[in-house]
Image 1 (cartoon, rainbow, N blue to C red):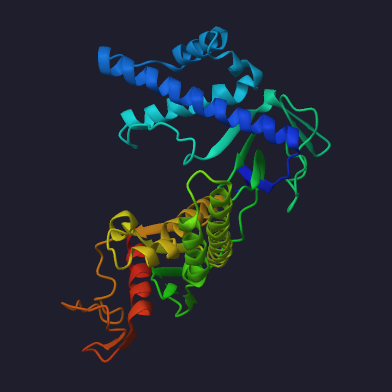
Image 2 (image 1 turned 90 degrees about the vertical axis):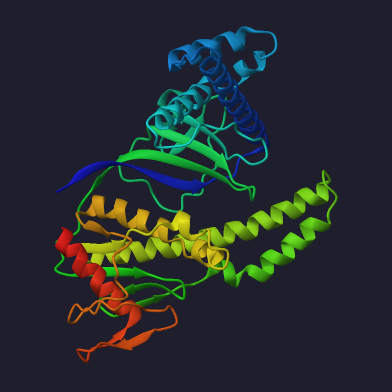
Length: 368
């Protein structure tokens, strides 16, 4: 069934010097407003047990602009500042609903630099995007076109740690589901082999972090030798950030292609409900688990399945997929990690990962 979804398209852009100055000022004001509003909410709740609403925070923002100390807040577009208050309101809603921890202050050095503009704060004409307080459109690298006739509803501008500028454009798009597929697949996640499919296919783990580990270590050693606060240290920090960005970009591109392939080829995809947050507490495996990015792959599978008329089924993390014979159903007491191939009493010879993937698929179809 055709559906209309909100979809974000992210592009790099190259701002001129005036745009860099305006965006840097906007980022600083967004961070300041968020932190001030958070401080006010925390004080009111701690001292009086009172919750401050978004409307009260918005009124406080108006008062701050009129005060002598924060008049500079009026120099940037008001929309990103209001959006910062809305994000804070959502953070508190998630906290009180016990979906998230208590909101924290934004750090100048560690927090993501971004500003969100709604429709009243930008102009979109003939494929050119101009933000409020700017007299020239952004120089966007259109790596792929927006959907035909799409009208942006929200624009988010950000700069990453590697100094790259990005603009994320939110549009409504009509998604056509894939044609129904007859295949179903079970997916067993691993480290050496990223995923093993119940069909017997094995997708090798590219291990992008491991591949660039020497380059990363060299950049980090150079950073450690630089004097804190110096311009050379800032340049060295940028080189480290670029290595990390390269790792992240390559990994995300690989996972996007893999998730699209699995969703395109299979009607039902069964996966394990892995507790990645707990698994990375293992000091010996944490780095490899993080590099595998299982959680990111599952998230991609889930949203693409919703878009294209597929189904992702999660199997309980305690399901003994590795110790269960997929041929006769015999459950073995032990199955050490170093055992990669084993034979059941029924005579079936199993590859450990393929057997686990087949059991995951069978358990998923039962739960369906």
